[in-house]
Image 1 (spheres, one colour):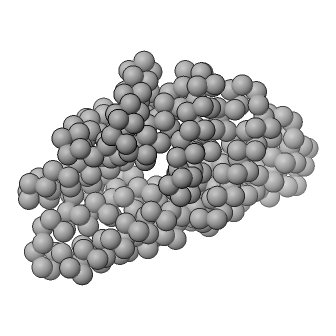
Image 2 (cartoon, one colour):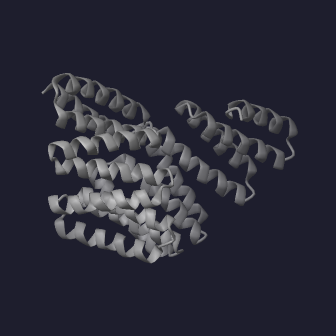
Image 3 (cartoon, helix red, strand yellow):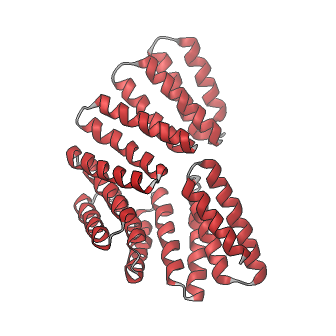
Length: 319
């Protein structure tokens, strides 16, 4: 019972979003794992490994997340728990996709999709479909990706799953951005944001707004893109999600650079540096500092460029 309570606490932390909450989820999931291992609770052990995999994925530790998800799936198969197997496979698919292993991602997510359909879990089915869509886009299969995403949306609407509908809409938008259909993408993202706002899911609302930045840029709507970025960043700061904030600031830096607004580009790039420093992501922070150096150099500010370049150099791993 104590382990189950810890697993519920971990899920609550993950639902809150933000790096502090994710770190807490990882710690609590590991505590639950130890209790389950001591008591011989194989089902609970598998659920704990799944919680660990989710937290590691949220931290960007995708190789570790894949290993944990495989262990969760093994234990789910051992005890005959189809839901645990499906959840572990869905997590494994996302981790494989993040590492560029698209064939493995499609295989894992497709198997998860079939299990979720059998279980009648529309929301989780849509998440697995989103992974399949992303993997097919990576494999240059946009037509198949769009068909899959729209199928997910229709199934979610029929089942009344708001979260599933929002996830599917975001997947539709992703494909539309990829095939340069910005109006359809913007509409899908607008609808997805409305659903996430209704569900009070601030983390996913920020993710949708980040996608909206790219959709607006396809139509040349720079002001709308910057407005979406401002809203997304405000949410990221509210929920203390520094990684998503860094992603937003990277896009903002690109926008200002392309518009020739180098001072504003430097400001947003420095904000990205601060966010990545807080995360302890030395390599990404090094690349961000290199961006700052390049921008200073473009402005003819040699001393500042050298300073930022040196900071970047010491953050990169030794060859």
